[in-house]
Every structure is written in structure tokens, then in C-alpha cells.
Amino acid sequence: MVAELDPIFKRLEAKKAELADRPMRKLFAEDAGRFDRFSVRLDDMLLDFSKNRLDKDAFATLIELAKAAGVAERRDAMFSGAIINSTEKRAVLHTALRNRANTPVIVDGKDVMPDVNEVLGRIRDFAEGIRSGKIASSTGAKFTDVVNIGIGGSDLGPAMATIALSPYWGNGPRLHYVSNVDGAHIADTLAGLDPKTTLFVVASKTFTTSETMTNAGTAREWIKQHLGEAAVGAHFCAVSTALDKVAAFGMDVKRAFGFWDWVGGRYSVWSAIGLPVAIAVGFDNFVAFLSGAHEVDNHFRTAPLEKNIPVILGLLGVWYRNVWGFSTHAVLPYDQRLSRFAAYLQQLDMESNGKGVRTDGTPVPRASGPIVWGEPGTNGQHAFYQLIHQGTDIIPADFLAAAVPHEQVGDHHAKLLSNVLAQTEALMLGKTVEEAAAELKKAGKSDADVAALAPHKAFPGNRPTNTILYRTLDPKTLGRLIAIYEHKVFVQGTIWGVNSYDQWGVELGKELANRLLPVLKGEAEPAASQDASTKGLVAAIKALQKD
Ligand SMILES: O=P(O)(O)OC[C@H]1O[C@H](O)[C@H](O)[C@@H](O)[C@@H]1O
Image (cartoon, rainbow, N blue to C red; front, side, top):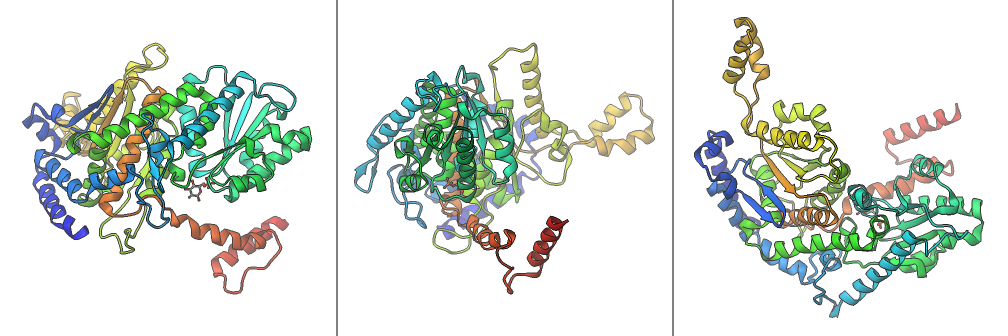
């Protein structure tokens, strides 16, 4: 497959050379239909990718790349339940969790939809029971606070979605998320809570993750201390694929919500891992969230590649990463409620495609997953945009914005939107030294000042951006946005030939932490073979702890 892609990458290199003296400014001037050519709609969502270093030919060549890499075939394999997670020998079927059409999805000869629907029914009953007070605390009181204890995929998705959907909280309980094994996280969270009205959701796909088990133990102790051992059951529920381990932890399996090994952790917000979201916004809104993702699944499966939003975003990412050599990708929502979206995408993208070997174990022949980062606008404008506009690195960026805000507060939204449009315009257009000089002259600056300042006030421009515009950040839209990025990651993983669904890279650190734990607890000495730096740091910690 890689050899087959080489000639296409060579042609893309040639296209890049051709585009060197055709900046976007020029491309826009040349082609009045550029916006229509390079934008796609999906209901009330719009992707404008016209502000990219792209012409018709380059785009067509990228589409050829997707075809040659077998994106469509592998996509169909994923949806049909093929074992595409080869190192773990698993199907990849988070799409079944949001399969609102309820068509059969077969894994190992069995339709998984009845199980999916059964758990969804239990999520509905539990979430609505908590919201109404029908499922009450050990004291009979209505739960006012729900603490989700989980990390990685068992935290980032629900935490991000809960914030994103705050207009839908209504009279539901407050949601809190504890992930870090740093005791400060749970201590600060519990400090503001009343044990009598607090419910814990222990969320872990494997139910072995050290951080989560440690935090769950501390939470259990907190309930026991305040309300007694008998109260524990009423204040806990669990989400996991390992229901045997839930029972072994001493939790009531009747209050456990299962999911399956064909759901990757970072793809699990659609499963029972989304329970806290359902509690936060109510079950109907959770279903709307699933529906939005399902709509994107249908789009991804059926839209021609050149009109396919995840395919386009994936190809543009490959274009910049592999042909132009840009190593990072920024996600900049002009939507405060998406404040955790970039953090969520970091796991989705970097844990999926941060791989150095292909599925056959051979090295990836070109750069794979980019560094993904971002913060909401306009805050970023007053922090790191300087580098995006004038720095020596080029940072392709996605700008996200809602046309209609949830709340009309004065002219805030017009100001927000004017900023998002201005930023992508500025990044595309830039400002030449001559233009900067003319402005300075007009402002009455001396010739010497004009000459000195113009280079500082010039903007190179030609900096690529996508704009994803939607009507309002509602549950359906959030579901769509996440699914778009999931499938973008899929497209890129397919082109790079990596397994986007395993994460062996997180294991070594876990192993070494387990080995060091007895040393830091004072139960053992560092191994003689331990490296000098680690030994030195252990000694320094011990010395500080003695003082
Ligand atoms: O849900 P859990 O089994 O507790 O896993 C939580 C997280 O930890 C692991 O180390 C993986 O890197 C993540 O993909 C996963 O989401």
C-alpha cells in the first residue's frame, strides 16, 4: 500500500512547488467560485475549506490518495464489524452505539444491537431516576451532585460534553469529574460536597486503571466515614466492560452499566461511559447527541469522497503533515462551552495516530499524527495567536463557531463572530511589507520609522484554516462535531497505515510507575540497575520529605 502511495505523494510534492508562488490571496483573486468549490454542507453545518493552500488539481490528487489508500474499503470494513484493530484482535464499532437506525451490526456472528439498546434503556432509567429523585441517596434525599471518577477516555469525553451542553442541564444534579491520581483533585472536589447527596460513577473500561481505582477507593472511604458502610451501595454506580472486576471491587453489579471490547476508550462517550452526560442533560438530549453522530456516520459512509467532511479534513491534515511538513494542528473553537474540546481531541487524535509503526510492524515511512492543541477564541488571540500569525512555524487550524448563541447577551455574539471571521481572513490574506509601509506613511510616520517598523507590522499570510460553522451548539451538533473528528482520525490512520485503535505507547510508563511505587512508599530501595537520574530524583524526594 505504501509503495502505491509514493507516486501520489510525489505528485503532491510537485503541486506544493507549483503553489509556492500562488498564495491563497492569488487563488481567491483567480477564482470567484472558490468558496463554493471548497465548502461542504451537512444540514445546518458548513465546512469552509477554501482558505487552504489548495487548488483544483491538488484537491483532486488528495482525493486520489484517499482512493489509493483504500479509505472507502477500510471504512466499510470498520462499519461491518471487521477486526480492524489488529494488534488487539478487535472490531471497532463505536458507530454501533449510535446506530439510531437500529440495523443489525454483527460481531462474532451475533447482532450487538439488542445489547446496545438494553444498556441504553438502563441508562435512561437510571439517568432520569437520578434527575427526578426517584433514585435517591441512602438518606432518601435527592442527589444534588454526581462525581464521575475516570481518566482518559472514561473522563475526557463526558467532561467535555457536560460543559458543552450546559444550557441543557435544567434541574439536574451538578456534575464533577475527578481523573488525576493527584490527591488534590479528589480532595478539592469533595471539599465542596455533601456526602448525603453525592453519587459517584466509577468509570473504567478495564476497571484496573490505577488512578481510577485509587480515587474510587478514596471516595468509598469518604462515604463510609460519613454515612457508614451500609450506605456505600446507594452512593455508587459503575461503568465498565469488566463487570466481574466491578463485583470484585465490592460494587453492586445491578448498578453497573456495561459496554464491550469493540469500543475503544477514546471512542466510548457514546457508550455507558456517557452516563454522566445523560444524567447532566437528560436522556432525550443524550439520544439527540447520539443521533448527531449517527448522521455523520451516514454522511461518512455515503457522501462522495470529495464532498465528505471527515475525508476532506483528513486529507488536508495529511497534505500539511506529510507534504508541507507542518507538525501541529490547532483547534480553536469560538464557542466557550467547547473549552475542553481540544483536550478531548488530543486523546482522540494523538492516542490514535501517534504511532511509529504500521499495522504490519514496519516503520511508518512518513510523519504520522500531528500534535493537536488549542484553546477557545477569543482568549487564544490574546495569548498565542502572535505565533500563528507571524511565527516561523505554520500552524493549520480549525476554527469552530455557532451562528446562533444560546443566550443573546448584548452584542457579544456579533463581536465573537466578527473575530472568528477576521482571524481566518487575516491568516489567509496577511499584509505585505509594502501595505504595512503605506499604512504607516498614511499615519504620518517619518520615513525612518516606516522603514524600521514595516517589517514588524507585515504578516506573511497564506496560513491555512478551516472554518466549521453550525447553527447552535446543541446535543446533535456536538455529536456531529465529535464524529467528524473521529472519522478524520480514521482517514488519516488509514493513509498512514497505522492501527488507530490500540495504545501500547502508554504502557511502559505504567510498568515503571508500578516498579517505583514501593520505593516511593519507603518499602523498597531503588534497584541497583536503576538509572542514575531516577535514583538521584528518588533521593532528592526522600530528603525533601524528611525536612
Ligand atoms: O477506561 P480505563 O480502562 O480506565 O482506561 C482509561 C484510559 O487509560 C489508558 O491508559 C489508555 O491510555 C486510555 O485509552 C484509556 O482511556
